[in-house]
Image (cartoon, rainbow, N blue to C red; front, side, top):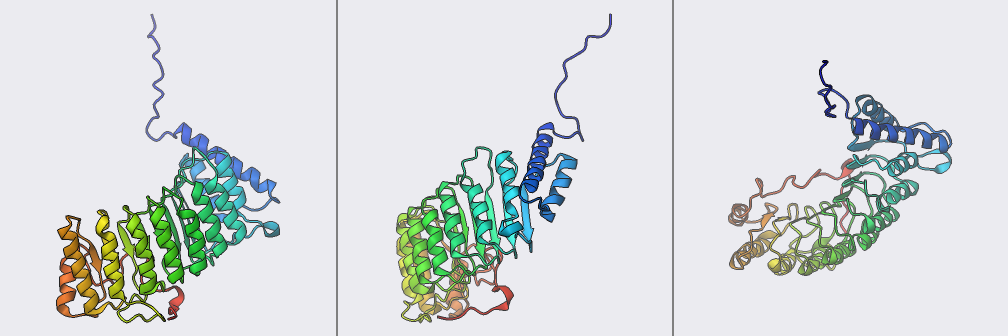
Length: 357
């Protein structure tokens, strides 16, 4: 008798393409091609075409899309993102995790496409991060993205850096984010945000229970704006990190009618006495002086007496050497004096100097 044939194992051999991934990427490629034809027979975006070609050939996934200096203007003023994100949505492509737009002009039509993708309830959507860097982003864009994130349940990180959205943009963005319960990291470095925008962020974090990190480096919130934002922390028990490097939070209030940094630090310390998660505060490139240093050191002691975890504070070196060393001794930051920190940091785009108000 011949040997009895066994059942096929169904397991993928080494080097063999994963059938599920192969089917997913083929569906996405086909869907994108059809929609390109549907919308005025336009050409595919070069970076998308290249990524799809490689992924289809290798039966791989596309976890990340990066648009660098891309031209997103489509036929008759439409957005070239429309065919792509319609295909992603309608084919239920689940592998995409991150989308980055760097030095790429984002117009209202592009924002509408992205917002529509973000706000629709899609069980297969797993997008977790969206980043905008130097895009001429507008307050309208902030409003629409904020509205979309009111409904979105997957995005945990939003970055809108080096975009002059101003107070208006921050206010409109926070109207949506105040109702969001999944975003963990909000990055708004170098966005021309002042006192009113900081106040809106404070109101937003008072009701948002998911945000753990806020980056506001290179703005103009001043000590009074920082104080208004700090008041929102009275009702927030989740924030772990706040970066306010280079924000005119100064000892003598360089912003007109501003408060001084000492009052901000004292208020912040008071608000944080009910927060057992807060761990990092970046005040580098703000002149808080020795009076501000004393307030920081008192915050260290108050948290210790309350049995709360230590707070790591980064400060500017324009204070006595003794105070500077004492603050550095109490922090886990490798460089307590600043000079970096956060994500992409340090200098304003294009070498532009920030205007003092």
